[in-house]
Length: 194
Image 1 (cartoon, rainbow, N blue to C red):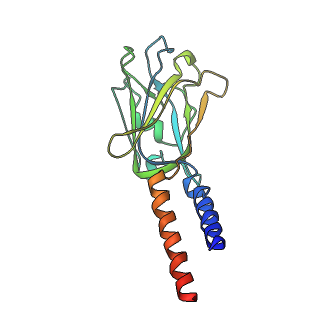
Image 2 (image 1 turned 90 degrees about the horizontal axis):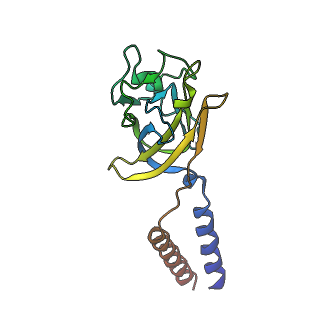
Image 3 (image 1 turned 45 degrees about the vertical axis):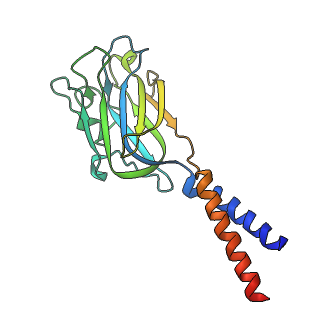
């Protein structure tokens, strides 16, 4: 019997450390806004990259089915520029808000709920890099906040900031049910052997 319990323990350990739980799961929406440290209030973003766990694909691309909307854009720029795969860039190939009241936002809707490892935000090249300090929030399809980070600084020479997302783990109740199921299988197997 002890042998079976040890096997169940190692199966549960393998499940908990499985790569299927390597990223933040069920991300549907990414919202970028200007940080309170961005004293100009303008929001300017040349590209958002959302890297999928395992594949490394950029799921924030419009070619991957993502869609982008912004609070309002400066004439000549567009929210779609932030998900076109071209960045870092300068104006007008960026999203640039048409207001500087600090309430600007860029929403990116992914094609489907996804597991992400990291997000990279690219600011504007050629001008006004002090505006490239962001807050970011990630939501699931029900609008539940999954992750939030503030004061992300893309003012450096690369005009970018990278955010490693936390690892999602199975809920304890799910693990307990799975463990009970495995213990039950072990008991039924032992009974058949007897």
